[in-house]
Image 1 (cartoon, rainbow, N blue to C red):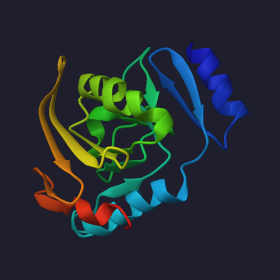
Image 2: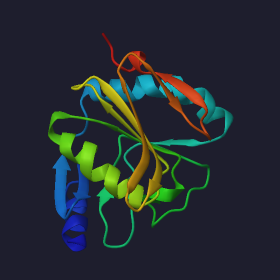
Image 3: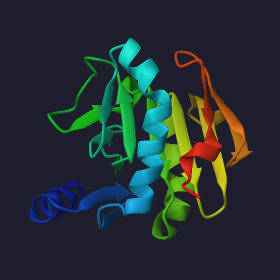
Image 4: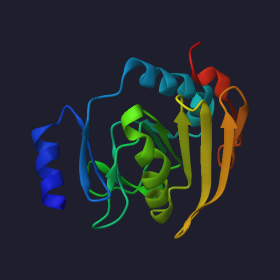
Length: 177
C-alpha cells in the first residue's frame, strides 16, 4: 500500500493524497469556504503562534508511524524545529495542534478514523470544525484507546484551547454569515 500511495502522490502532486485506513484517498484542494474557516481561525490564534515562534503549516503530511496512515490536515501548528520523517512528513507527536474542517466527502474520516489514529500517534490537540453540523470539537489527552477528553460546542460558543495555548476561540467567528 505504501508504494501505491507514493506513486499516486508523485503522479498527482497538485491534489491532496492521503492514506486513510488502507485506502488511497485523493481530493481536490479545499474550497474557498473551507479555506475561509482556516483563515478566520488563524486570525484568532496568530498572536499566540507569533509570540511563541511556532510555525503554521498547511499541506504537510503527518507521520503517524511506520505502516500507518498519512493525513494532510487543513492546518498544523508545530514548534520551530519539529521532528520530521523525511522532508514532507511531521511526526504527529511533534505537533501542537492539528485542525480539520469537515467537507461533505470527509465527514466519517474526519470525525471517526482520523481522531482515532491521531490519538495513537500522540497528536496532542485535534480540532474539528464541522460547518455542516454547526459544531467545533476539541480532542485532547491522546492515549492508545483514543482521546480522553472531548469538548464539543455549537459554532457561536467559546472553545478553550488548553496549555500550551491557553486561549479561547470564538467559534462564531469561524463561519462567515
